[in-house]
Amino acid sequence: MCKIEKPVVAISVFKSGTWIIRKIIADLTNLKFVEPNIAGGFVDHGDPKYLFHKSGLFYSWHLVPTIPVQHKLRSMKAQLVIVLRNIYDLSVSMYYHFINNVDWEINRGAGQDKFFKSLSKERGLTYIISGSKEKEFYWPGIGYYMSQMELLLEFAETYPCCVLTFERLVQDRKAAVADLARYLTIKIDDQRLAAVVEASSFKSMKERCRQKGIFSHFRIGKAFAYGNDLNKRHITLLQTQMRQYAPKLEMLAHRQGLNEIISL
Image (cartoon, rainbow, N blue to C red; front, side, top):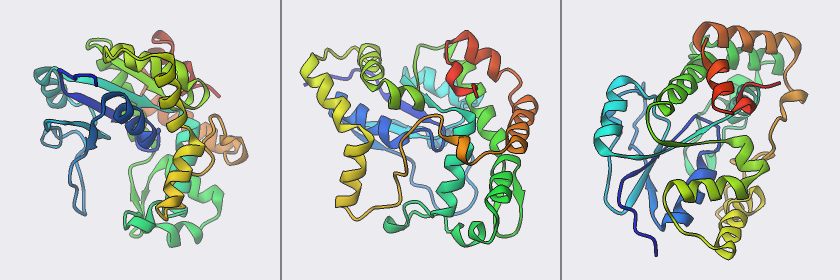
């Protein structure tokens, strides 16, 4: 059994593969995850009070790395795992999250399915991308999450992190798991590597959910699948959001070899 000397913190963008990275880290470290206990209402993802360490657990949530959060990560000497996702796929996944009321079976659905089913897909995706101040659905827009990714990549240039993407976790999970094991200084042989890779596959994770009576969480498990949902107007809106809210995201992605998060 490996011994983890420093706190492990996984920060994933909403809908970027949070449950996949949780499964991988759990299988590599033999630790269970912990997340903040969030009640209803507004939550400030950049508030450092939501970041903590509990012995025998690893932390996983959707933190925004504000300066106070960065200071706390440094003071904790956290082993930081970051998970990002292609901005076009991200918007589509968020749309289906709400219209399918994901995780309603475990009372964690957002309850926005009725609102989204009253809209055309074109309009629903526009709300996800540009934001909404409707009484039924208040939403910051995809620019908020692009800004989060930009801040995470900026921090990754000054702090030793393991940066992964949904695309790599889906398309080359073996290499991604091996990279993460090296970062966490965990020795892993080929047999165990194969077991971790298989256990975190879309098929395996979907089947485990089905056995628990959860059918809504896993949809298609593919990368670059936005083509059937986004039209040219949506793509223009997404690129406008990036220029406005995350003007350095494209440059940072190129510089860190993560072109998949901004490429069409």
